[in-house]
Structure formats: structure tokens, C-alpha cells
Image 1 (cartoon, rainbow, N blue to C red):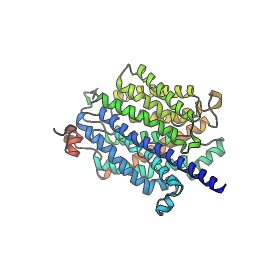
Image 2 (cartoon, helix red, strand yellow):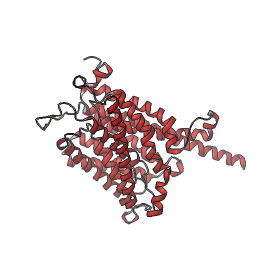
Image 3 (cartoon, rainbow, N blue to C red):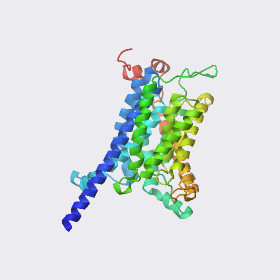
Image 4 (spheres, one colour):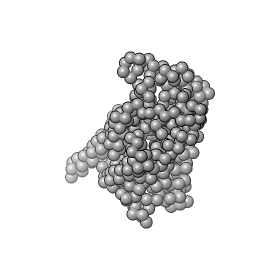
Length: 403
């Protein structure tokens, strides 16, 4: 009997390790989606830079999260023997890998907002500080119960802040940090002439679409595998993700008047918004959540581009991740309630408080970190470097190998 029990425990442990490893790989693959979404949106002279930023940001994020960020969030270090680390089939290591891919999404989000005019190393170092300190600080508060914030919410309002897969913890934080960096960087040269908007059209719609598709597919690993163990898997999360994605596509199509950029960002808006409540919403609630997110992104991105001359958000990461992420945190408190067909256990008041806390921490952290970088080394390319493009100015090569 002991032999059978041991065999069952080993099977469960290895299955859970494989499950979360597959999730980590799917979210890792999403970074290719971030890369191609940016490559397809920026002008040709900045395409190489977009690819390089996503790759190097990921590498630096892995290091700082391994040595610093994961300990801040979860109190776990890896300064032990390989024998200890490999216990339970190395589940804890693979869990780190999975959560690290979430952390690395923060600089990938920021990258799209600051594209075409940012220096390379100051932005890379700033992203490292965000991933190593700012992001895990809030991550630990929400997902590990650090500093008593969740306990206070439960004692005061009867429920903790619910963010199953990171509408606020990941996307909201990334989007609001990006807003701070965008404001500090300023507008791209030539963006406005005589007070009128000069539209910089996407350089490659097929690449933009490819990036969106890769992100959509990987998102099912992002959401479903946030359960982190096989016994926690829920088909509800998968279908809610699907419905929110579909809702985002359709509303972005209508409100965006068939614009391909909006249509391919619409599903991402829906998926950002559904992360928080994907495990508690009814599929119809998820559809509405995603549909509203598609409208929010399309209308806000248009308004920002036309009216906010000081906010030059190239990929629209603030409305996509910042606003839709915040909406997702609040929506979990609406459509997750049992009165609207959800599983319950959520509070609208708590969701609002938690969302505002995430926004405040992200904005403060963004302005402090990028403000310090701006004061020390500057964040922006020179006017000549920006005119020549980041590819030649930083990497000495164009996207086709000659220019």
C-alpha cells in the first residue's frame, strides 16, 4: 500500500510539474507576440529595435526576478543545492519559470508605449528595476498576502481582492508604469505639425496580425494554467477567455470601423480584462467584459492620439493594458457576483480598492524609476538619432540588413 501511495504521489507531482511547465512555455511564447505586434506597428526604421528590446528585456527580467523579485513577492530564494531544488520533480523551479514569464510581460508592455524614441540601456536598466522591485512588491501583496493588505480587505469587507490571472497585477501595473514612462519621454518628433496629428501608419499589418494571434493563443496558457496544478484546472476559465476575446474583436470591429489595427488589438483588450475574473464569471459576463474592453481600447486610443499631444503611446499600451486591466479588476466584482450568474465570493468595493491600489503603486513606481533614469542618463534619443531610427542609431543595422 505504501508503494502504491508513493507511486500516486509521484504521478501527481510530475503531472503538476508538467502542467505548469507547459503553461510557462505558452506564456514564454507570448513574448514573440509582443515582439511582432510592435514590429508590425512601428515604422520600418525601428523594427530591429523592437525585436531586440523584447528579447533583452526578457533575459534581464529572468535574472532580476530569479535573484531579487521572486524573493520579494514570495519569500523564496534559490540559494540551495540542486538536490533540494529538484524535490517534487522541481515543481517550485517550474512555478518560478511560470511566474517569471508574467513578470517579464511588464517591460514587454512598456516597450510598445515608448517605441521609436527611447534610449536602449537606460530603458533596459529601468525595466530591470521595475521587474525586480516595483512589480513583485504589488504581486506579493495580492498573490502572497504580504503586508496584511488582503487580510485587511477580508476583515473589513468580507472578501479579498480577486485577480486570478493578473488583469491588475500584471497588465494594469504594466500599463500604468508605461504611462509614466511615456509622459516622461515626450512625443515623437514630427508627430504633430501646426497642432494637427500626423498619422504614422503601421509598417506591416501581417506582422501586427501575427503578433496578435500568437498572444491570443498563448493567453489560454496565461489564464487556464494560472491554476498552477492539474486539480485546479477549470474549463470555465478557458471558455470565459474565449468569450471575452470574441467580445473584444466584435466591438473593436464596429467602433473602430473595420480598422485592422483595432480589430487585432480588440481580442487582446478582451483577454486583458477577463484575466481577473475568468475563474468566477459566467461566460455571458465574460463576453460583456471583453466587449466593453474592446470599446474602451478603441475609443481611448483614438482620443489619446488626437487630443493628448503629450501622451504619445505608440501601441496604445495604456488603454489596452492599463485601462482595460483596471476595468477587468472592477468587472470581476460585477460579473463574478452570484446575482449575475457568477460563482460569487467577490466584492465590488474590494475590487475597486484593489484596482486603485495597483494603479497608484504602478504610477508612483513608474515616475520614480523612469524619472531617476531621466535625471541620471536621459531616456530619449537625440533628434538626429530619432530621425535616423533606432535600428541604425542603436544597433547599426536595418531590418533588411542594409540602409
